[in-house]
Image (cartoon, rainbow over all chains, first blue to last red; front, top):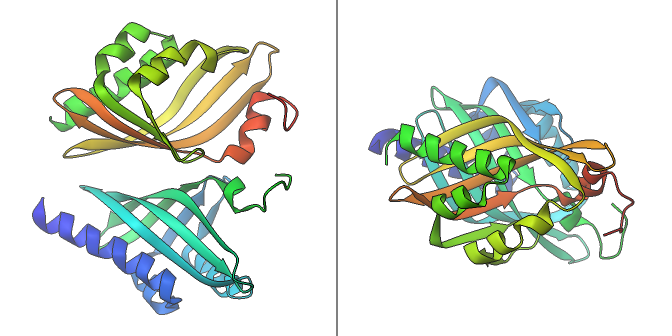
Length: 129
Length: 131
């Protein structure tokens, strides 16, 4: 288990570190060419390039985002990571939520990522969902 | 525990929830099991959850845990599934949920549950803000 476990953990950290640093090529290096991301908030699949584009668009909204307190568990063909996502808006407003992502990995690259979070925690207090 | 044993434990847990078998839930949850939910962010105990089980089904005719995708690791599992509910009114709804479970000696010691609470009212077929 040791080698695969270590490789999976390194891949997981590489992806989330790249997102934190807004390292778009770093994100791409983690993805297989046909990678898809599924999101429990929308129920839709998007491509790896869609996630890169979303990262660029996010710069208009956010000063910083960090993926903290990562708890990673690995299995033969993937991993699950539980983490705290903290975002800081340009006005300094800070919000956090707890999320998890399940990845399927082939040949050292992510082929699918399923992300689960509670979108209502990013809404301003008292706002409608 | 082997991969097969962990998968069987996971399926037994969700079947018990579906079938309202408190006796099986009592057996598969370790006495010191912690259940944590990303919506509330606080730990609850096995006793809390067994005591609140009947209330959690209030207004619901049936609940099924479908399309289960289970992956196991050395001390636990991750399961992705659809929670389908049929309310007493006949309304049906579905939620996507992911749970990470930790296991020890044939029992579940921790459950971390992740879902999007903004879909809950639609799932339950009730007006937003209603209880």
